[in-house]
Amino acid sequence: MPPSAAQAAHRITIKRYSPTMSSSLSRREFLALAAGVGTLGAAGALGGCAFGEPLLRIGAHPWPGYELFYLAREKHWVDPKAVRLVEMPSASDYIQALFAGSLEGAALTLDEVLSVRADGLDLKVVTVLDISLGADVLLARPEIRSLQDLRGRRIGVENSATGAVMLEGALEAAGLTSKDVIPVYMTIDLHRTAYMDRKVDALVTYEPQKSQLMAVGARVLFDSSRIPGRIVDVLAVQPQIMGDCRAALRQLVAGHFRALKEFSKDPAAVAAQLAPRLQLSPAQVPEAYAGLELPDLSANRQWLGSSHPRIESAALQLQDIMRRNGLLSTAPGNLSLADPQFLPGD
Image (cartoon, rainbow, N blue to C red):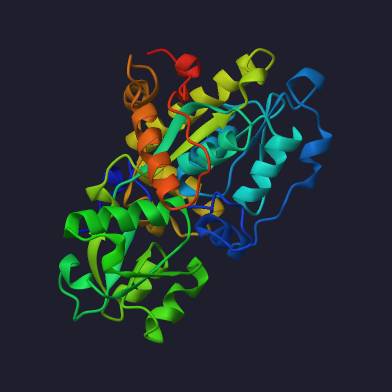
């Protein structure tokens, strides 16, 4: 059953980039380019927190889980003279900008954060933005009626951490291993064609391919609601900027939660405000948020601020999956990812 607008205020549809920075397009890269998102190349020339305005430069795609930053800016809850939100076509552009010092932080998937850290750039997670709870799916042909029926079948999947997490979760649920199936690695733009041309029997995929393939008979055998907490988007920043940018970062994080609270209180009005940037009608916005949880302030404290932050256990589990699939070369045991100091008070 489709979620109500009020329920959708806490959820989303969405995803990701291959941490190996390959030339192939990932989910969010493909969607961003399809939407005609332009690169703001001037970001590197503006200077960081120690060098003048804008004080804090944060990379954030036009993406449902990140749109509350932009809503907060439009509502004047975030001062554009203190914070600049930078749009680029792909996650790899953001990562390169972080290494170049052109950004102080970015909205990234947790696997991207782990990849950046493995390559030598420390990042701290200051906010958990969204969690996939059904947005990612494993679809199969109509004649494949159960996960166990996947034995010996060809499964199309992106060569990314998210693809690996989903496939591993589905195989575990079926009592199968990777040796029991035939993974066929392909980028998101090839999913529909591969299915229609019968080059695969099943796919690990997401919108819009999910709806398109279900319309021609594909059935959902597994979705990310069965592996909660494994597919996560976060706001990550370089720790050395936390002094000079402290006030600006607090303002940005507070703006996100203020916008989230507004979304919960009046989802119809906020949907109308989000629609233009998402290139959707207001009526389509709730569906765009179906399948994603948007953790509120209380949930973020559990993810980041407890004595055993949930983000740490999620990251340890994720990096093990990434290593098993050749997506991460090093995996330190002590991550120290979480920094809850920028979460607003009650």
